[in-house]
Amino acid sequence: MCGIVGYIGDNKAENILIDGLAKLEYRGYDSAGIAVLRDSKLVIRKYKGRLSVLEEKLNKENLSSNVGIGHTRWATHGEPSDANSHPHANGNDTIAVVHNGIIENFMELREQLEEEGYKFKSETDTEVISHLIDYYYKGDILEAVRRAIKRLEGAYAIAVTSKDEPDKLIAVRKDSPLIIGIGNNENFIASDIPAILKYTRNVYILDDGEMAVIKKNEIELMNIEGDKIDKEVFNVTWDVESAEKGGYDHFMIKEIYEQPKALKETLSPRINDKKEINLDGINLTKEEIEKFSRVYIIACGTAYHAGLLGKSLIQKYVKIPVITDVASEFRYSDPFIDENTLMIVVSQSGETADTLAALRLAKENKARVMAVTNVVGSTISREADDVIYTWAGPEIAVASTKAYTTQMLSFGLIALDMAIKKGTLSKAEADKVIDELISASDKVKSILEDVKLTEEAAEEIYNKENVFFIGRGIDYDVAREGSLKLKEISYIHSEAIQAGELKHGTLALIEKGTPVIALATQDKLYDKMLSNMKEVKARGAHVIAVAKKGNKEVEKSADKVIYIPDVLDELASILSVIPLQLLSYYVAVKRGCDVDKPRNLAKSVTVE
Image 1 (tube, rainbow, N blue to C red):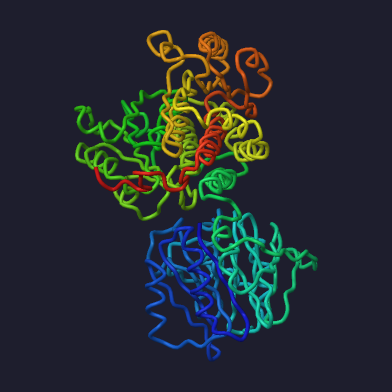
Image 2 (cartoon, one colour):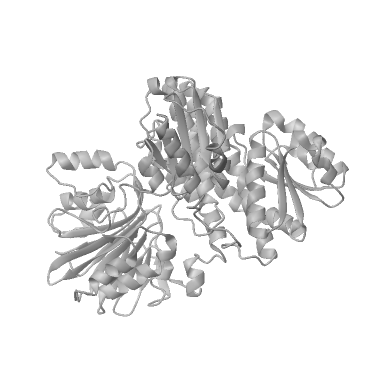
């Protein structure tokens, strides 16, 4: 997720902007830049790479400005480059904009502006905003911003500065965080509290649909219609380290709670009001899809588990056989790959060495390669024929959470897109699935609003040394992810077992007090799972079940039941994994583990 900082006052703006952006480095970024007003000119400096690159360049010149905006960018539109870095200006460099979020209708707006004679220097959606403000500017920057944002669709937090009105900054929020810092003869804009905590602990937290005019000694708050509003001042009591985590104790729990927003950002630009799917990085035609005789989904670790859901969805919706395999084994299994093969590679970082090697093997054998990744400009995204970005924002914790759920959601979009083009799903069937995908964000949010039972379950198992996860169908796939999460951050030995295979050996390991996490979210397998739960409970297991709301019969077979909202069987994974993530987190905390940095593990595995 990108970072925004703005300043107006009596001190050196460039120093405060750089300092604020440095406090947001934990969020991840690929470029940085600032725009400041000096000698009645707008000066923009922006560079690909670390913040230190920008800082080194600025040290060679004395900008001496008292007003400006700054940004660290996590690429969504266009690869990391100087040109794609923020801030973005209008044609004559009199208006500059920094922006977090995604403008869904930017291509439509860009085409309209190009017809009006506007020239674009970048591939970004953000540059549309600066030109659109210019289009409406008639001597009043506030009015121009208000008119421009009414044309924008999507999520955004925006900060604007204008050469012709150097006494003010404009800030706007819609679905992306933005705060206003209140100082003494100076005021601030930031996307997160750590950026300005050194200078003030008093802030206004903007809500969706709100904007502000920030001057040196005045802050004017209003809605996007221009009506004045009053807000309470929020006093920050956290220390700097806690503030970077948004008040959470660890990045992992912060990222778990970011999942509703991440899911929405993955989905919203791809589905319009008519429930039509637009995957702008995937260009498969009906004829190409019909040509595929097989699909390989290749990934490692958590991404592999997301690929297991991808297999289920593509086979169910598109009617093509799918093999999901771990990248480290795939190349050595003599796979059959030809021009009728589609390979989908999944990698949060886009740099996973084994996955990249599988991609290159596929390309050598004339296969079509599609990538599911979170990082624009990564090696995998560049070398694939097609790419869908999850837009989950950066993950700091080693244990993946929001990357996993957004990967699963992406597979839902891919499978639907292929099925609709191929004609294996009717419009009514597709619309039903799309409705479920749209509701996923709110359903995940509802799970996160009541975690008491999950915390209690963690209390019951944190001092155990063996835990088993059981499930059938895609519940087993989620059980594998739950087991991985528990072992990697709590160091408890855990295994995921296919519930139907218990009698073929695993029951020998069940004894009195053995914790068993049972997933029972599949309606067609519900009765079978109840029988399997009774099997382990009869051997003394302590059973914690995850089931859909309304399926009360499960309470007769479990010691504790954690319910998720009702959902289509094939999409239940996106919801059922949330309690498992929380359970692993709470267990690790109770055991005193380093949750964000588990021993012996790394975030991005770039060696085989």
